[in-house]
Length: 252
View 1 (cartoon, helix red, strand yellow):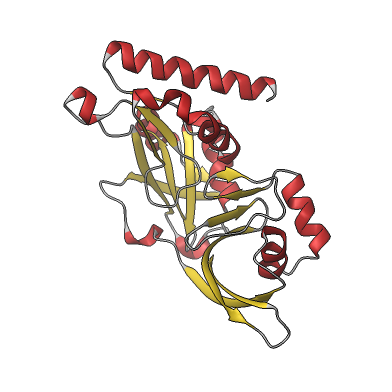
View 2 (tube, one colour):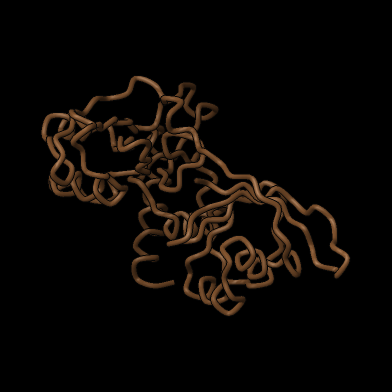
């Protein structure tokens, strides 16, 4: 484990011990997939404190960890996560806005990356999960994304617009191995798929993968940095040439 990994592990241990000893909920900031993978590897050591992982909505990649539980404390406390809706004032004259544009504009306000969760872009509008303590600041100060004037509102509930959209596909692969499935889903060479894994860019249900031959199970969510994300639905039988049909749902 590198120095950053040790710092994160120490922070997780500190929050768990503080929650347990002081009988109050403690929260991390937003953790990215690599950080969450480190947390999952160490979670047995802090399980005594009660743990829950949440990013504001289902399928978020950037999440907080909460230490403490209603069973121990006798009350519940929600995650300090707020969803902000950012939309062009005049859509007809708007730039084409991307995830990077929304992220850059928010960070341009002096906000650190770990205070921002997932950013979902739908029809040129951005839905941004943030630490609740900075949501009003963003609302009052975010006036432009790129050259586009925007309005910012705080969502009282999770809108249907951010529900994931899928493309269901049946793909032929040589076997149920992670490298073979990545190659088939993203139309990569096998060597290129192996390189994504060795470079630490592949996560299966939140865990960073280093094993090329890992077999996927139905319901596994696979995230590949720079390529996207899909859900492995399962095997669909063999072809005449002894290859394998697999069913996946790609996030679009």
